[in-house]
Amino acid sequence: MKLNVIEDEPKSMIIEFVDSDRAVAELIKDKLMASSSVEYAGVVKEHPEVGHPRLVVKSSKSARSLVLKAVEDVQEDIKELASQIPKPKK
Picture 1 (cartoon, helix red, strand yellow):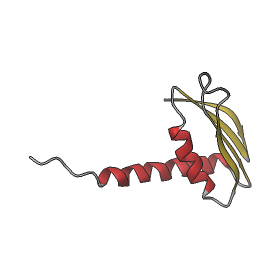
Picture 2 (cartoon, helix red, strand yellow; picture 1 turned 135 degrees about the vertical axis):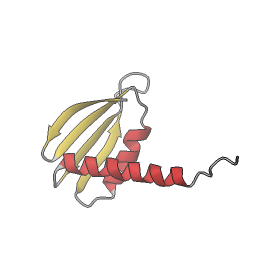
Picture 3 (tube, helix red, strand yellow; picture 1 turned 60 degrees about the vertical axis):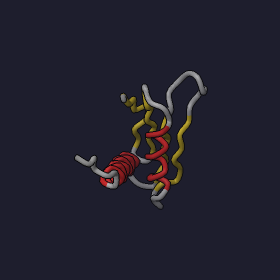
Picture 4 (cartoon, helix red, strand yellow; picture 1 turned 30 degrees about the vertical axis):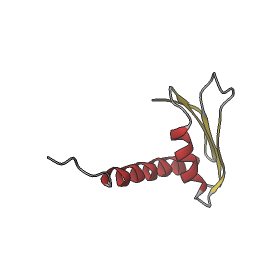
């Protein structure tokens, strides 16, 4: 997966997810929305068949820091899920 950072301002950020569907961006958005510092987080796509999903974030604090924290939280959730999958029996 490749990311294009379209906007990287102190209190706003737009990240385009190239070669990806909306799923990863939506996971990050959901984590961002749990923060009281996030004023807006959404995933947009110009057209359903063309273009790439974009994560748009507006915040009262550092948008970059909030996005990085949300990514870490998603990673932890994935690790927790993976640990619940039973090991194969030998």
